[in-house]
Image (tube, rainbow, N blue to C red; front, side, top):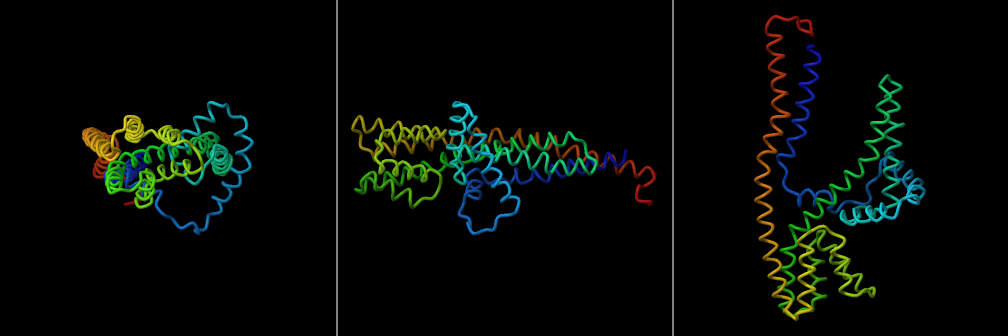
Length: 296
């Protein structure tokens, strides 16, 4: 009984410590900047990373060939939402899922089974390895779209000033995108490259809207195309779009702040309070004269 209570106390305390960074989170833009910021490409890859990459390269083409058209299109959209981190393709992503399932299931869990663990861990670890990349990709896509929502109003303000100063729209768009790093600038540069390769301007911006879930970005594309059709001065349209986006961002920030209180309360109730109660029960148990497991 004391061992069980002690294990439960350690478990809840560990979860509480893991949850502390969540309470001190600086926001989606900072998280995204930390995850996709400039990194040294000369870093040495670990042996496990090399093994995963080789397995993914072998398994990806074979498994991706059997994907249905709808499933492949859905994966393409999810990869586009996340900005295709590391140049991921559908084949590489499917290969990554399969290789992690093999290494985590029969590999890591197999060693635990040989040491006396339950065979259920093989299935559990294999499922974790297979669905882990999906969770990571969804989170990366969400953070990227949040970053676009945050930086787009400032981007459009600077773009409007550049256009009002006399620069051509395409040249101003390139200058601002190159000067302001971030996912919104990456998307704009992609549009410019597509236009330079001969794609119609309207189709390029419609493709930008399809590649992202950001409502602000979709509003920007719709307003820009409408301004071109109606002959509205582009600088004024950009200022109006930026003002609307800031209004929406303010409303979203208020809604998120209202939802933060119940989440913190739930976190404290489910993690910190049980661990504290268990520690109190242990102190009472040993304080009543029970024999100490350490021989005291």
